[in-house]
Image (cartoon, rainbow, N blue to C red; front, side):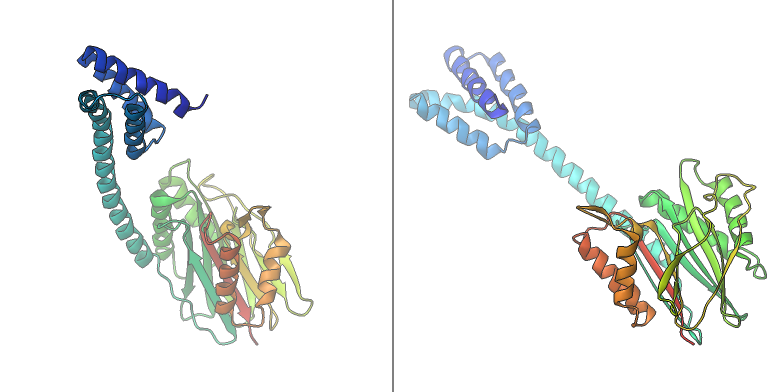
Length: 335
């Protein structure tokens, strides 16, 4: 027997007893019934309709109908209290949402980075949070030398704690020595910062690489981050990055191995967060070949248009509801 089939005779019984005895203690049963109705999300208009049908069905006199309103009023008092609690929670929720919106705007300002304009290189980047606060982070480091640094990181977690961790990573990077661009050294330094300052239950993955614009050489090291792709234009194949490394903050003495990739005209470096590779549909996660096919579809376009279009396609695939923060970076050698 369902809840509604159980509640109708119960309500009838309360009305009958009250109309016969006029005992106010019976009204307390109406309060308890009200709690059950609210728990099962029975709308107040349904309760009023039920009350009306009971009174008409049993053919009560006008005097009895008026008296029965005492029971209905007792039940409705519970709804009134629930409504006031709901309004209070909505007010608190609105205040919290406004605070989070302010924090999200501050995070966007703090973590803002500009895509460098480099002769012979085309770079595109997009980062979209699944919620208001972004647990992904990317950053470009360019100076007067011929090296361009590219960082991409992901906090395993969401919300404000993840956003605070990303802000810490950004400012730790800003404080690194300007003359040390070695990817392994950068990750080693950041690893110590994370190990000392981040909660042990929060993990950060990161990939850091430098592109030598003179030698067209991409050097990188990774700390447990989602493996990137290297696209070879000549053979039209996608090769996985080597190595994964240990996540930041696990062991302060971790050494990070460096790898090198030589780029020819048309070759691409593709970096991403797991929000890209773990794009989920009704059939499950997309396969590696699915992702590369989306990139292939727009490979003739500038890098920024590639990442924008791939994001739109994957967003559509998920019915416009991101399950995780989405970050995709493409570096293409043009000549």
